[in-house]
Image 1 (cartoon, rainbow, N blue to C red):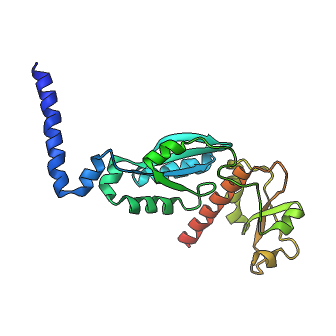
Image 2 (image 1 turned 60 degrees about the vertical axis):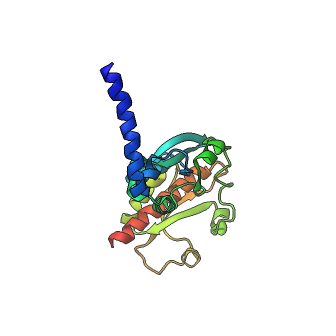
Image 3 (image 1 turned 180 degrees about the horizontal axis):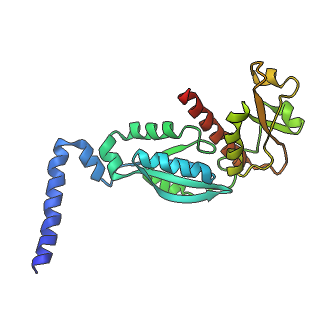
Length: 229
């Protein structure tokens, strides 16, 4: 009898506590409220992208509440944790911060929606929901016609991690080569003999998901190099 009394009493005291402090702290009230439209952020990618996005979201107080598939891509829905709500309070700002932190990591961009909208939207989508056919409108069409797609340029030392990135994303056949005739002008690269190119062969079987994964992680890698220089 005694333990049930304290259990019920504890729930009652907790409810009064929340009611009292919510009058003084809207952040606390919002953190415990369950009937408001919590923001949900939807992202997609291959495993190397997903691993980084989970880490960034976790550091900012978000957690995965739904996981699905869209062709080769894994789809995640992130929602703020209780700690995240208490830390920020302003969910619009928190959502903007998360999307800014994720940058271009998500294949095909990101979606922000309400929790109820996310339930209707779901986590499973058709294979072409996020990514268009590969290289549609690509600015390097001239090189694609030659059967070669440049991915990045830099010194041999700088490009070694790029080769590792392409492999982690599933792209096969990436290689380091010299600039082709007219390629420096097309890519607007300075005349520097130490600079070379990482490229892959174009193929009808080239995966849009793998290509975007490599592009997103290569961009993140070079951004990190700029920050350290």
